[in-house]
Length: 540
Image 1 (cartoon, rainbow, N blue to C red):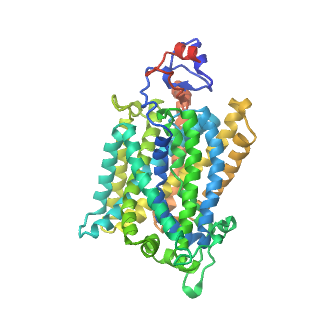
Image 2 (tube, rainbow, N blue to C red):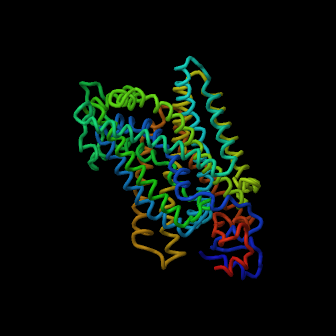
Image 3 (cartoon, rainbow, N blue to C red):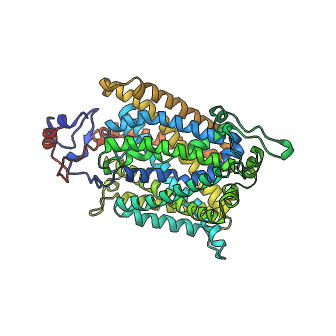
């Protein structure tokens, strides 16, 4: 990495000195609060990121839409194609993660590749994206918790359930990151185990209640919409909707670089976690969605169930082919899955706020870490406060008596859509940033596939998925008028960040120079605190 030894020899001699295009190693600074270094290994990072994708939530909520409103029998193929495209995206993303270890993720990568202005714009946008995911999942949790409580004759207004989730997440994330890892690990293992039981249970009944067809994983069917069946009153689907919801199911895996500074060997663990999470989720999603459609006698029967009663789409099959006990367990795991997913996004949002705070782009207090736990506790408190405000705003303006529309349709659906558009755009932009970064900063490491062709293909595919999203906003927004404002809100946040960077460039160059430039080179064996610049230079 360029810049640390040069900083030690600079004429100013200041640890926080100006680096030009070079990075600033936070381990050489005494004025930066650090996260808990070497706190988690590969498994821990996987727990923190894969849980953000929420496998059981993605399957139970997204698969019926991919089947009924998208590809019909080709739903598993849509997940298969998404797997291949995201693996290609991960090639360049992993290469960048090996060079740049930073809690800033998209923010740092884009800043280094395409400049501080766009980097700050995407930094602001990333904060917004991950910040709204937590209240979004709180809405989903409240909806399912309300349904579960009704089974016991208990009625609790959905805002109280959503707020309870947000507050419990704050308590758990305030503690050591190892606590988050343990909680998310238990939730993830339970989710995956139940989905595997579902898959085995369905496929073992092939020919005896289950109908398995190879057409489901034909990649060509990922680009074909369900043709419809007027005689059965089944509407046609659109391939674009199916593909978008397939990609939506991975949101969360890309946050692995945000935990680099807390992992034991970030230049190895982060790239590995990206590949493992994409491939693992891809196989799981493809097989589970294949099992889901195989639980019905015909494609029309599967599509009819998805269009007519999406909430029971999986449960009908699990009850019939596996047993009522499996349905009961899944109805609880959708609660724990939603909670764990919200917690994972809370952690990511807090770390983006922390990154912007320690670089003094946002208030410096956000860059402080807890004296004992080394967690970004102030950033976590701000994220919790934002989530509470969002939940209350939806309750005030949307109402509290209809969880299906208010908690699920509006809070969960609209906030998830707002954040997902940003993530898709960020993944497209960071792909371009990777190409530029390696050509300019590391020409000797520039590789025709890893840092050129793969990122270009990733950019084109992510741009296409974003196009699918924007052209299907009417459907994706559930008919709510707020949906029309979402692209403008997302674009406005990015522009605000760019303008902020331009303001700093003219008024406070020292702060401008630090935008996206703070990286973590790690401590040598036996060291447990910041090094002076000269010491850092000597060990390099």
